[in-house]
Image (cartoon, rainbow, N blue to C red; front, top):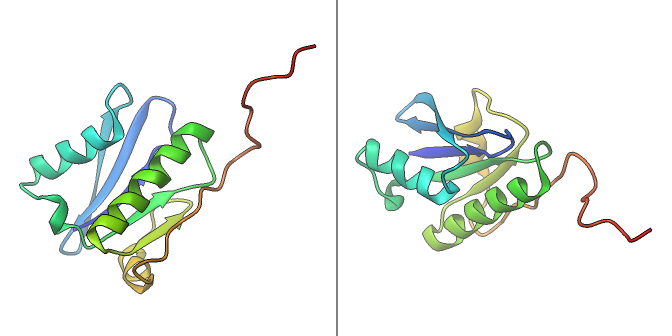
Length: 123
């Protein structure tokens, strides 16, 4: 099983997943925690974390904090499960082959759609 986590939307979490060769997309409410959404998806498919063969994460769009959270989640899962991880800008047809070609132990970095706006200076 392969997952693509897209946390770039303001109101939903998108998780694309592939069982065998068929990709499916699920939407989760942003009120849910990202890990809760991953857990729910795996439970609904009668799968466990150990069933994951690789991960991808959308970077380069969306909010700064949402991107950081998604990258941290996939890097942590990749490390713990010893599976490959890949950063992409969106889902595409040959994603599984590219995930499989990524070396295990090589992690992704967050890329942002704009500079971070963490607090403003006092004027």
